[in-house]
Amino acid sequence: MFASKLISNSTAAGRKSSAFVATYDVAVGRNSYFSTPTTRRNSTTPTTTTIDSSGFDKIGCVGLGLMGHGICQVAATSGVHSKIIAFEQEQRFLDSGNDRILKSIDKLVEKGKLTLDDANDAMGRTEFTTDMDALRDVDLVVEAVIENIDLKKDLYTSLGEICKPETIFASNTSSLSIGEMAAFSGRPDRFLGVHFFNPVQLMKVVEVIKTDDTDPIVLEKGLKWVEEIGKVSVLCGDTPGFIVNRILVPMLMQSMSLIDRKDASVKDIDVAMKLGCGHPMGPLHLADYIGLDTCYFIVSGWMEKYPDESDFFIPACLQANIEAGNLGRKTGKGFYHWEGEKRGDPVY
Ligand SMILES: NC(=O)c1ccc[n+]([C@@H]2O[C@H](COP(=O)([O-])OP(=O)(O)OC[C@H]3O[C@@H](n4cnc5c(N)ncnc54)[C@H](O)[C@@H]3O)[C@@H](O)[C@H]2O)c1
Image (cartoon, rainbow, N blue to C red):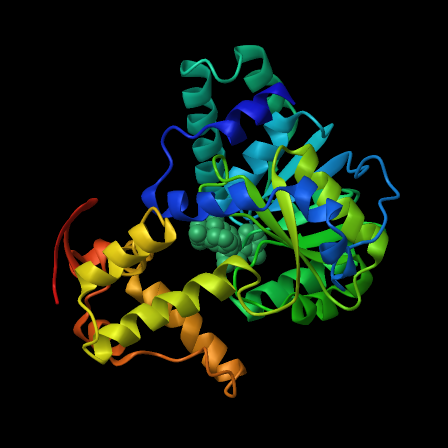
């Protein structure tokens, strides 16, 4: 418990894009979420709490990439599980996930944020495997494999056959429908979304997503688990982008529309949103930081699936940047010039 508190409370070295989202969870504390009568009337909010703990003794983490290794680490250092089964299909990816966790835990020990004993306990509780059968009797599977619906459908079909009937599945997807994946698991009532933010070790908020089929107790367990591993849960229905990205991404598109219409400059849009809304980073700076290809990919997917939603559109300047291969920070040019992590002058 001690270790997870230190990790998740750390504000030291977060990436800039994370800092933007971090302001969000300050305003939406779990206590206030559940204590106001207005939010209680919200159809997604459980009206009563009937459990003291998630009861997740043994959990599985499937996929140990950027997000999965962080989720596995935070779960392991929280000390609330007797066993964490860390699964990747291929040995080389398993080894690199294991390495990432070790390096991150080492840093915490070096900085005095985790004791050596706690670090050893966390690693001792974690079993790294390429054998999916090891997930058979876990209480919760958290999935963080690449964002590909066909791959996830295959995975959930297999997990649905292998895991005990009581096992709850939770996907960390950013953009796919939780309900669609739940249908392939053979247990739609025991299926949730748990959307962590990058870097998992630092970012406090986790969006917990329910579908119409999610059993209320399963939802409560999911919310409770998020708290147990030291994070703040917010609840959302199965809607594109959930809360954060549904608000954030259309805002990025609107800021690009101002550029298309020549209503304002890149610099002035970013200054306006920083000083006018208190955002730590302007929207065009943030779009460059996230990657213009990622922004494009998210909105294109939404447009295809929800053609009547007027918030989902691709501004001409985004399209032009994509076609020119200007993807923001990662290519050195987008709405700004970049030198590595250092932002230069606006292009427009
Ligand atoms: N990158 C982000 O900032 C971010 C933020 C929130 C949520 N997400 C979501 O998290 C999920 C993972 O994203 P990521 O950025 O960590 O991707 P990643 O590519 O870094 O990691 C994915 C991992 O999944 C593994 N994998 C693929 N198929 C597998 C299988 N069948 N079984 C086990 N492991 C398998 C890969 O080997 C890889 O290690 C996605 O659904 C993504 O939408 C990403």
